[in-house]
Image (cartoon, rainbow, N blue to C red; front, side, top):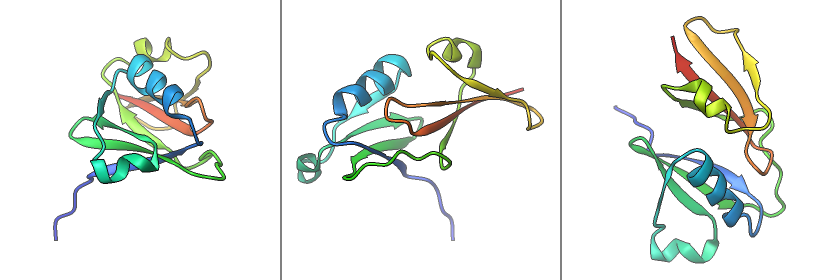
Length: 115
């Protein structure tokens, strides 16, 4: 059996789509993709991330993911880090530079550059 990742999903609060779009499109640079018509009424938004997708779904009540997180590869970690107010650098893994930060809702994110 062969498995591949199709998408990942993060929760966002009700009416969080505008902030999500500003963060994931404007700050990070992901391209928003259209949700299927049958799912649009549920709220949230979707983005292309490489050949996979990032789905942001409404969760009520909302609680941010404080430990679980996405690990996103980038070829230019320093440039990306400058787009955030606060990042936490971590050098615990060999052959990887990385930092942690949060999205506008407090979800934990990890950005990685292979070295």
